Image 1: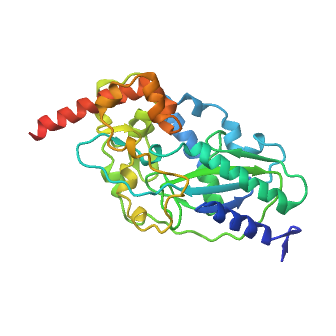
Image 2: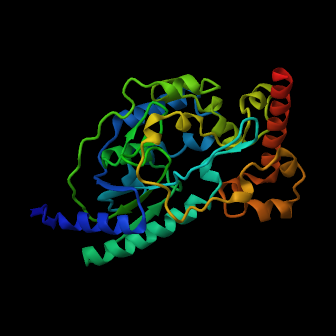
Image 3: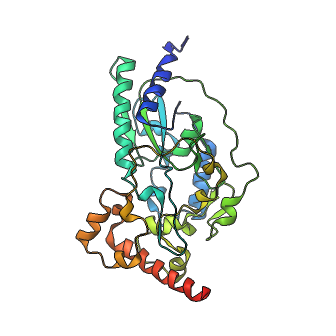
Length: 322
């Protein structure tokens, strides 16, 4: 069967190779306008809900029209890979988000996407121009993932992929070839559940699908570069880096069959690390412990900032519960 002169089997062969590489899902979309996603994005900036992430205010035209990022763009390939490995924390201990206890996904995902591009080049026969992006371009990732029908955005603003849940990383390949594929309509996975909204300790989830990043623990511990105010320090609770609370309480994440890709190996020495250990780290010790993980990107100064706040919060909690 041909569509626009291209056999549909090309998409199927790409999906087959993606599965071999360990991707949880892959899909294809044409670079059509995304007015709803852009309106949500614009509203967030207008309301100041992006906090101090000033980079979000730049390249709005490119976000609206990805063809400005890549000349000759015909197809956006969205790919998701799972990091949903089992992890259990005790009560009253410092916590690190699951995505940061493994090798940096930027490196792992980019390498797999490079392998996939090599396969696509063989399939299309003619010279292929492609650009890989893993958090490195101003793309509306979730919007394109939905357009490609690989997932649906939940009430916690995170993409949920069938059989994989929301513990996934996204990456894209921009290509100058039209790749056509059938798409299945995906259901609303959230239904009447509101666990994430009710359990967010800082009220960052204002309503279904609407977040105030400036109140989000992940933003505070990862993106915010300055010192905390007293209120912000209290808000992060036990979280040293990131936060998984809105994913932990999601029923959909408990019903997954696709598990973490084998490239993501848990660094056991980082699980249950103490605030005292972090506060006593030298630069060389920090590098030895965290090099190759997402935590290394924020540097020792900010990690110690987080650790001081967590240590105070844990002491306060012990005093209150004594």
